[in-house]
Image (cartoon, rainbow, N blue to C red; front, side):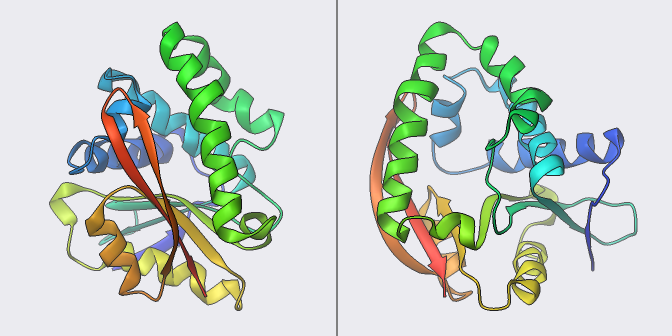
Length: 209
């Protein structure tokens, strides 16, 4: 197994990583992705690419595979002092164009409901400023062909080794993921309900230590 950071990812590497995340979440047992895309899952590859391009600017993209060029699992982390879409440069890398092409009801869901609700809830669970003081796991996904091979755990360990005791935080939306993170020392800090086109979903906030 090879774990590496994509410090200066090429377009090809970003496309591979986006394809892995799209495939991983397409197999997810919950319906959160449906809500995020307003039921139009053809938007998901563009959504994943926008996130990765933002991460290449303000975060860290880590990948794992079984050969030097292979990408079988992807993790997008934001370290101390940074956050997802926190800067104009990050948003301009793909997110602004994506949102501009959302149907009006989906754009409204994101900007008026989900983002403010999730942000306020996360801060209430973790404490003000905790997320940006530590390491925030924004995305973690493994290709369906390579799950249960230790790749996702290795991507957590890679950043844990450099966190030096700083908090590691995340949000997830299915019970299987909660169990996975608990096995790696994360604890549940709170839960909330998110309602979208996919129905009502429970979002869980976790942290370590």
